[in-house]
Structures are given as structure tokens and as C-alpha cells.
Length: 63
Image 1 (cartoon, rainbow, N blue to C red):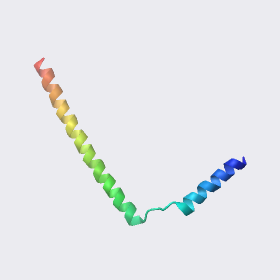
Image 2 (cartoon, rainbow, N blue to C red):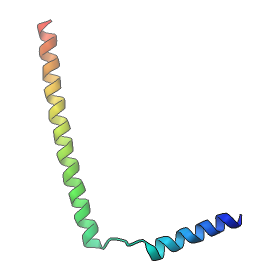
Image 3 (tube, one colour):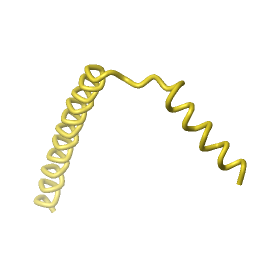
Image 4 (cartoon, helix red, strand yellow):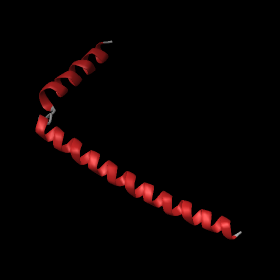
């Protein structure tokens, strides 16, 4: 039980004193970058899916 308590205390101390938390402006800019990258990836996947859909429909239409 003592090991568990020491682990929790060490984890708390590390989170409070050793971790460098980002400032609000840094966090906001990072969130915007992640949202833009996510939208771009969604558009790329949508485009590839659309192309494959049309190719498959074309192939089935020929058979």
C-alpha cells in the first residue's frame, strides 16, 4: 500500500512542478492547427473515396 501512495505522490509532484503546461495562446494556436489539419485530411479522404466510388461504378457498369 505504501508503494501506491508514493506513486500517487510522485505523480502529483511531477504534474505540478515538472510538467511545463502551455499558455492559453499556445494552446489556442495548436488547436487551430489541429482543426485545419483534420479538415484537410477529411477532404483528402472524401476525394479519394469519391474517385474510388466512381471507378467501381464504372467497372460494374461495364460488366
